[in-house]
Length: 456
Image (cartoon, rainbow, N blue to C red; front, side, top):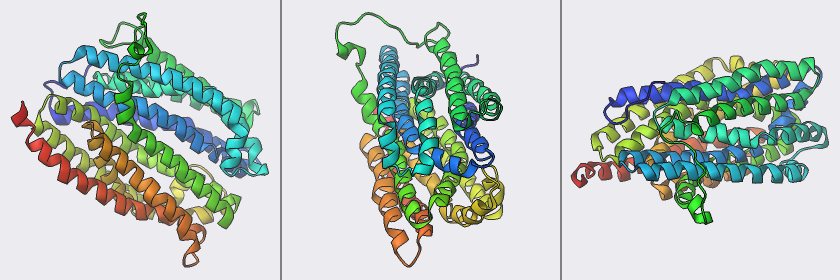
């Protein structure tokens, strides 16, 4: 398997070699949930109601993803910086600590989720009509938490070692399995939403075993080992640093969960259950269109971290400008597509004409300022990759907690906006949050980078 040369390879080539497999992997990984929704939305006689019920599970799924990102995205930049500094033992310990954190957290989340499934869903706004779908899907989905967290979280360390193709293949294996199992379980075996969840769990299990084959075997230089230790501290030597840097991506996912809860609650009040289904579709479209930006920024992250650790100022600046240019151009192209062909995107998930009538204007409102999100994600990636914990955490909280949630709760009550106000909160936060994050990055990071070479 070809390895990316972070030490002497060209920046553009390194970014391409890490970003392309990650883009393919993330797009395919998105199929786990997207394909579920596509099939669920087409269950005869109950597709729209089932789609709304499954949509209420998203905050819990996002919470699991948040912990996965905490240990994966939080530890991988530290791992890459240690490699750039030639601290091989430290890099090895960071990776092993992250793996143990993932396993312990996955077991804890599975147990808590199974016990608290019903009260959690009621708190998320599940009505009696939705509860049957939501509980079945969530409880089955939670059984695969360990698989999901290992396959996604540990991929970050495989990518950071210069083997993004392995990570891509692990996701392809799971996604192809999901594509095959979904229609079999949902329609042929008549399992409905439970079949969708079961297909996802089995597919995630295959991905996890594929990742485990590499991180436990001898094909990678850095892998998981199980020496006998005497104290808990020796099992988790870098837990504090990983959690500290990983708090920002964790907050981003958790605040996404809070935003989803706020949106569902307000929409149920102002628009009814149909608008929860509309938000499920809008969120699904966003996941689909956000994925390339996430792949481009996360693919650049190990390049930034390695060169920052090696104190190569020119390479760090070049990586920042190239990443920004690519994601902003992509965001503008997507904005144009949504203005031109919203029905095409919505129809991926549902062909219900009543749903379509409400979903088109909602999609236009929600994505009105989408290009500004590219600046938010670029700035956040730079802060995270260079281990700027405080700024990473602040801007994670700023856009979602300080801007989106209050706007989601307030706008529906103003000027007779009603349910439309929920979809207007996102573009307002994109403009303010995106500009604030990127300008702060320029004003604080660029001066530091200029002095980086003099410290070598």
